[in-house]
Length: 421
Image (cartoon, rainbow, N blue to C red; front, side, top):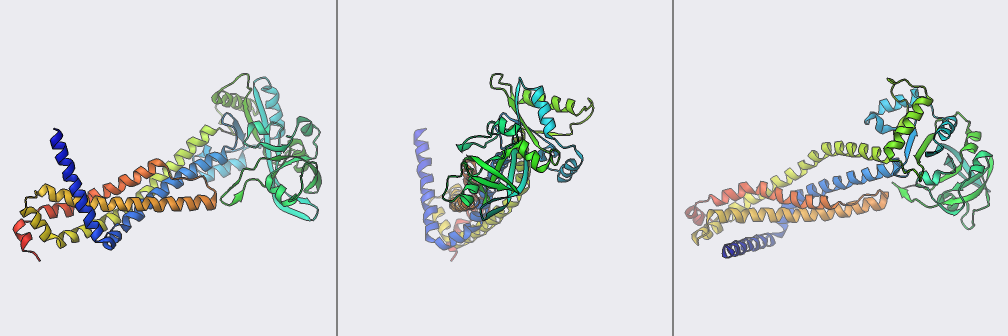
C-alpha cells in the first residue's frame, strides 16, 4: 500500500515538474494565457470584499447605538424590504414622534427601561470671524452616551439640569475643535450656534471618517434647548430604549415593551399595523445580509463571465500547445507513457497555469481593496474565505477547461504523433 502511494506521489511530482518546466519555457505565452483568469479571480474577490465591507458599514452606521438598544423612528428603510417608494410614502403619511411622546414613554417605563431621545438639524456654527455652515446639530437627552456610540473625551456630558432648563451648553466633535479652536482648549469657551451663544462643556471622542466624509463635524445640545430653537413639533425625533442594568431584559423583551407602549400611546387597534418603526442591531444585520445576498446573487454570475472567458483562452492555448507538442507526446508514448499519463500531464499544466492566474488575481485584489479602504475609509478587507474561493475557482477553471486539450493529447496515435513535424 505504501509503495503504491509512493509511486503515485513521485509520478505526480514528475508531472508537476514537467508542467512547471513547460510554463517556464514559455513565460510570455503563459502570462498572456492567464490574464483572463487573473482579471476574473480579482473581480470575484473584490466583489466579495466590497459586499462584506458594505454590510459592515451599513450595520455600523445605521445601528449607531449599543447592541441592546431598540430605536423608535417614524420610519426605517429596512422595514420596507428596500422599497424606496414605500419608505418615502411612510415618511410623508406617518405621524411624527415628538418630545411629548418621549416623556410619556419615560414615565411609563421609568422602572424598567432607560429611554432617551435624539433630534437632528442643521445650523451654522461660528466663533469670532470663522463660520462653519451646515453643521449637524443634534438635540439629545443626557443619557445619549449610554445609548449610542458617542463618548466624551474631555469635559463633561450634558445633564438633566441642562435639559430641564434648556441651557445653552454643548458638546462638540473634534472637527469643530480643529476648525474653531486650533490652538486653544475649547472647554468653557463660547461659540454661536445659529444666532445664539453656547458654552462648550465637552469634547466627543473622534470617530474618524467614511468615504472621505468626517463623522466628527457635529454639535450636541440638550434636547430641550433644541426644541426651543427649532420648535417642539417641527420635526420627528428618534427614541432610544434599553433595559435597566438591574433587570437585564433581552432586546426582544425591550422591543415588545416599547412596541406595546407606542401602540397604546397612539391608540392603535389590534388589527392596525404599526405606524412607527423599531430598529435593533439584529434587525439591521438581517436586512443587510438580505440586501448583500441579493446583490451577490446578481453580481457573482456576471463576474463568472470573466472567468469563463479566461478559461476559454486557457483551453485554446492548451489546444495550440497540444498541436505544437504532438511529436513530444508521440515520443513519450513510445517510451511507455500511458494515455492516462498524457491526460494527467496536460491537466496538470492547465491547472498550474490557472493556479498562477488565481494567485496573481488574489494579489491584485488585495492591492485594490487596500487602496479603496485607504481612500474611502470603508471598513473593507479581503475575507479569508474569499482567498480560498479564489484559489479554488482558479483550479476549477484549469480542470474544466483543460479537459478537452488533455483528452485530445491522450487520444493521439503514437505512430502519427512521431511522424508529425
